[in-house]
Image (cartoon, helix red, strand yellow):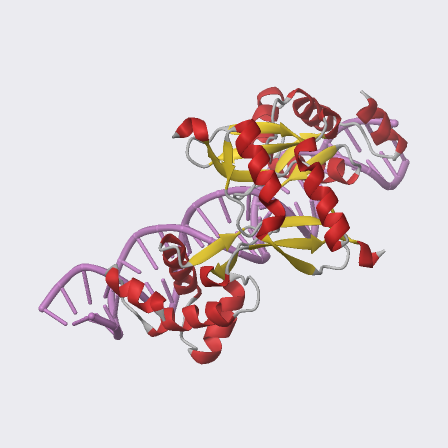
Length: 135
Length: 135
DNA sequence: GTGACTGCAAACGCTTTGCAATTGA
DNA sequence: TCAATTGCAAAGCGTTTGCAGTCAC
């Protein structure tokens, strides 16, 4: 994995804990929380500590390997950047999370830059509301 | 204030604490945090307790008198509904917060409803990025 | 008078931190 | 070897809660 190389290039070590966390992020099918990563990591490596998860996520985020997303609520979600950017429609009635392509925001992005001289950073935006399927 | 009437109609009491908190929200020029409300309330009413702030905000939110907004970061922001809906462009370089009218999102709202059968609830959305003035 | 409300203090859940022991390079 | 990294335990921080006393109505 290219992540391993990047870690070493920057002078960081590749510990088993980091390899496991990267693997979990890599295989995840959605954005996951530190708690979910911790539970999954512990299955393979029982001694792993939650603070290692947090410290690793902080490092990976700083290196640009994972994205940190605030999907609302009390905890952050993490996501392997390799998997690309997209957005989430979160239904507040049924709890469903729909993924939408980032292109949906193109016109908004243009309008903000043109009219407000503001360049939004909208990767993995969470949009709350309700899906019509619920009604 | 019509808020006072609504409280009584629903069988809630108008305590000095609640009147002060409503007044602070009413006069606020931006979204404020429970902590900010607490500090301001304490100036007028030193015995007030932080849990009263939280309980009051929860009540006012439930009654639809204030809006609860997640502007990212660790704490929620509150806002008197009377003041209308708008959005925030938060510059991650200079910290500036720009307000934009909610109409900016009209086309996105339409696209989501049309293409994804999803009705977004985007009041007081916080959009991160950077303003061109910074560069 | 009486139930809604408050202050207080303690607990909560997620996250961060200090430190001594460990380990990858 | 030896600094980076870890596990552990404790603290931090915003928020919530149980409870006994208080106060709006």
